[in-house]
Image (cartoon, rainbow, N blue to C red; front, side, top):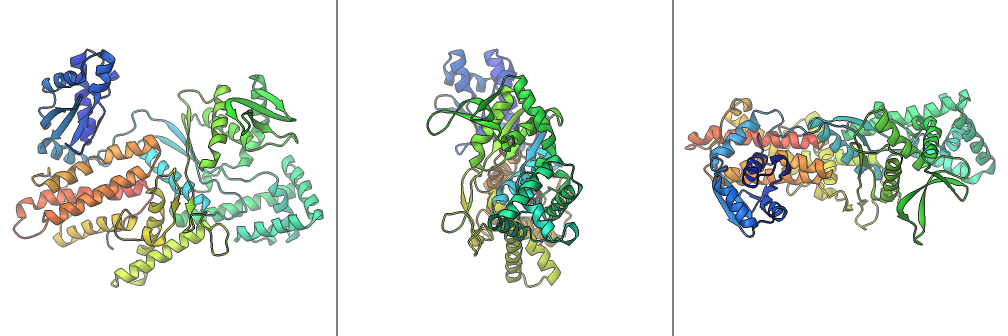
Length: 577
């Protein structure tokens, strides 16, 4: 096991069990990093309350078992019953060697393997993706990578808007332009605006659009369905361009649009009715979900069929839950959706529980997030005053990354500069998003995200590249030092070791809270610890031959943690910068 906190927790669990007589499986020692020592355990406090014992005496009894003697150079009971732990250098070195020998660098597989459906990105057909899609796409992509990394089976679902009343307007616009073969959808934003303007200006066009909706819902008019399919296909081409340039995993095979669920919605309503959950309110069919009220304090209905007979988001989302649990056998449903949808999703999840679908082990998690703001603290907009388009942000990141490379490294040829610039620019864009606490708004700032110092992707990428350059100068194959058990005589070596060995905890903590900024913080701490180590502990300098292999081993493991950690965030790392 390459996480000392996890190893110590197992040891303490057995020691607490021996002292209290309780089953080890029921004990959680709660071991965390501590500024006063390497780690601190506070399990005695909770157990003492449960057993009606003095917590400090309980902690002293655990220490007296000697269970920690082989792995700790100092163990001290502090305060009301905390146990402060200082690890032996040998124990840390062995943990480092175990991590270096593990392709996962000490990150444990999930204790319970699940099938997880991650719902993220969710653009609309025939509309351009904008800044509002940035957070859902990048956060969702990072969570998918981490869930897969620890062993879960992950289903990516891009729940695109490809059905409903707007398509009557869009299809009629295609007809007016000459039909399927004559319409160019390479500019989805412009196409949608043209159709919308025509709809708002012409009652005749509006009437045709409404008739077209009826034909679409019937699914039996060949020309209508052909035009609809063209809109979907060309939009999927556009989505692939955006996702490919942004470097996320989503592709057209992951698209499961509103149209997929439409045929199953009547059956979902029938299930609600059979379960006695379907009611009527003002002509609409609703589910009364306990605990939700409107601004007047009156019960708030979840409308699943409008008074016109039409379906809505609640109908679709309830049908989604049923499909994901019963067809895909998912036990974890992850919705990476903005905070404004919190109440809606809570009501949908509760309705699914009332229906007997979303019940243990199946559960749903709303991974909510705030907004991307401009300097004015309002939603980030383009120069035209409209929401900034996602592809413009991606292209802007690449251009700025290339400019930064051209300024810092004049030795690269044009192709190398272009490739490296794209890696730096896209990395900077993603990391600025992921390093921010997702529940908060953040201000979009090109200068800050592209800086080569501070908690940024370029800083972490440069730290990795600098380590690669150490091995090039030493003419040493990095793999050759991975069997070395490092010595940790200097405080900076020890501090770096402790940071490297918390990689496992950082990944699992990130997944427990579905918050990628926690992994970002850890990687930044690793890079800072490496900087302190490199400044204080010569690696290749003459006169330090005795410590060279050990320090090269620390350098290599640092580079691997940075590379793997950033890869889990969807960010590439170069070997030269």
